[in-house]
Length: 576
Image (cartoon, rainbow, N blue to C red):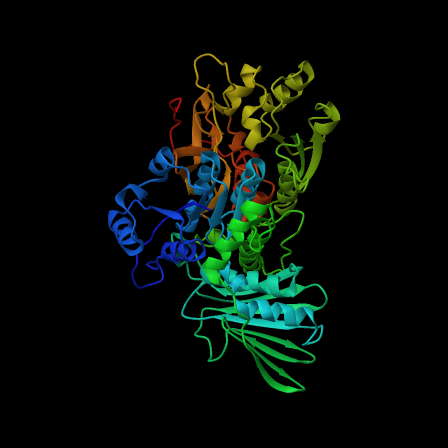
């Protein structure tokens, strides 16, 4: 390892948001590899100057941006030490630039889909990424793992770990989640949690004030994590078993067994902490060996935090390895008064014409599966017609109260045109969901009904539409017509349709604020009060959120009840 860069040098000051973790990474590089050429990146000139002075770096190794760094030199290894929301884009940028190794600070990201993309990018390019759970390299914890494996405490173990001083799970307790996985050499089967949450934020993301988390492991082992209140005196990690008790700190291991009290002195280690992490990564890059903090496994600690938050949100135990894992940040949902349980509506039988849009490659679950569960939860009796297998027929609509479209079939057969045309002409309710915005591109009447539509490449007069994966803030435009228990709400990263075309005026029901601009995400036809669109819904797991289910229910209720356009005038949108 001859070159390494710290991205996010940080502010060397007091306070939780001022701690410069980038300095710890830099010290680790220089201790483990004294001859390494170290670089620093930080947009704050004062932070960058202080970093350079502390580690004796010349000005030509200090950069205000990663773009400037990579334009001059691509280091072998980079440490991503920015605030968590930037971990995902900066890891992807580093992979694309051609680095060989990445050290990513915890939490790894703020969204499970971002973690998946980071891991996939590293696999595709052969980049070794580790997560900064550097305590795995400290002698006390290494010896504790050996003692547990040797059965000194017995088999049925309970680990208790505490974090005080007002910290939170994502900022600190993920270290203890990772340590429990390391000591038990296992992954948790379930996570159950309770939190005190009042809308606080740290590093620009949602945090809890305090929490208690219970994790069940294989072989009847358990772990309890307490975060927030000041911890009592004593080591932060204790493991109990039928044969004794173990207290662990970074420097020593204390055993209480039938033989008495024993202090196990630490074995000498050439490198611990960050230096141990750097040394391990350097050997892995040289010899193609495994790393102790490999991101494929170490990312589980971050996922356990999301599982704990989801457990507190839903009041259920969560399996971090469930077929449909939590891939969003559950506490962000609780930042808004949008978490009331969706009230079932008497929708009765509804026909859903849907294709298997967005099948999760890991689980095989599609957006259609999530939508089906959401329809059941809001009081509908969905009857599924799988669009990739057959088209709609008369029997599908015989006794349906509503028709929903969720597919991207671009061509409409004569039968489909007749059936849906007669349905709309007779004033029966039609709800178009998510990808249905792009359906039937060859059918002008359909586009006229829905007003705004997806523009496929090559269509004259409009630039192609696009669907970046973005988190968004939802705002109800007209609460008198769009009756939902929320007025504002947050949605995790999902496809947001941008640059839609328009063939007819539409009344916007819900707007979304995104990092790429404001866009409508739900609207009602200005000419047909019984036709409306609910735009979100690509990811299967997003349909678990009350916000999504309530938004869908409000859209369906609007067209079911034939509520007209009394509160706002129809609008037209530019192509962008």
